Amino acid sequence: MCRDICARIDGNRALKISFFGLPADNREYLTMNRELHCTVNEFFGSRAPLVSFIAQKSSSDTLIAEVTYLNDSDARITHHSRYKVLERGATKELITEGIIPGDISLSTFEQAKDIFAAIENILTTEGFSPCDIYRQWNYIENITVKNDGSQNYQEFNDARSIFYGKCKWNGGYPAATGIGTARGGVMIELYAIKGETAINKPIDNPMQVAAHSYSQKVLDGTVVKELQERTTPKFERARLLGNTIYISGTAAIKGEDSATQNDTVYQAGLTMEIMNNLISKENIPAPNNGAQYDLLRIYVKHEEAIPAVKEYMNEHYAAVPKHYLVSDICRPELLIEIEGVAHI
Image 1: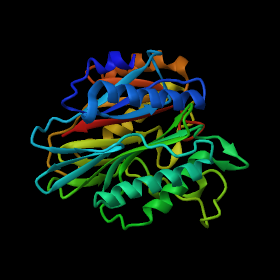
Image 2 (image 1 turned 60 degrees about the vertical axis):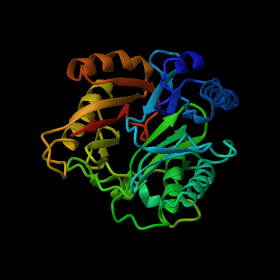
Image 3 (image 1 turned 90 degrees about the vertical axis):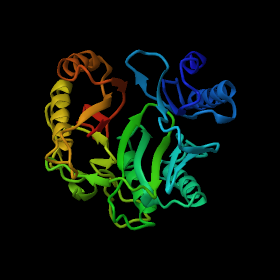
């Protein structure tokens, strides 16, 4: 299946392939991850796209992929084993594959610390700061599970807060997604940029409390020994870079409180209402005539709800490319999360 996917990809422009599939257990996840990396490298050679393997079942119940392409023929690309650097003029951009820890049997907190140490090494090597990150994906196995009162998602947020504390985020945090996976421990992908002349701003949403300003009442789990309290998820609701809007993982949360309706389609509608407000021309801090969605990635907690969600989304957002995945969400009461890319 990997070779079949590779055969349909323009290897001259592909930067990254994100594969989605459901391994039986963590041993199989690690085996499949190695096989995907090896197959892509054999197929494309020294300029092979980066590879991420996300342990989430797709609605088509097979191996599927999203491909990130470079449309700028003037950009210079430097290839590394776990990341690529793009340069044009004074602008320098870094894109990573899905970075996993050395040992996925460790606690979520220790796995995340290991990954952030690797990220810090990559950023430092290329002259970047953590504050240059503008988009990040955080995949967390069994995201809402607690171990002796310690919740996996909260452990991740605490590790991220420690790493992000190494610099001053005067320009706002990245857009980000924190989502559950069935296997694979913790994995992080990110984009970073510096030297850009285009607008690069966080976008808040009046319908929601900023995630990094949540109160303690909506945070779950015990406090890790390195900190005095549970820390908030450090991300913005979206980020505008040039004319592209990177929309963070968004769920049916108004203010800081989750929707109480146990209805996936209802939560899908509320989530899209929140996202539509987020990208409205009244809410974007730049001159524009409105925004259009380019891609929506839709995470659904219960697989049996996907047909109804598809029907709703196709009725209201028929022209938008959509990708459906089965995954747990960061709060037990939430049934769906949606992220995306749009442009003004």
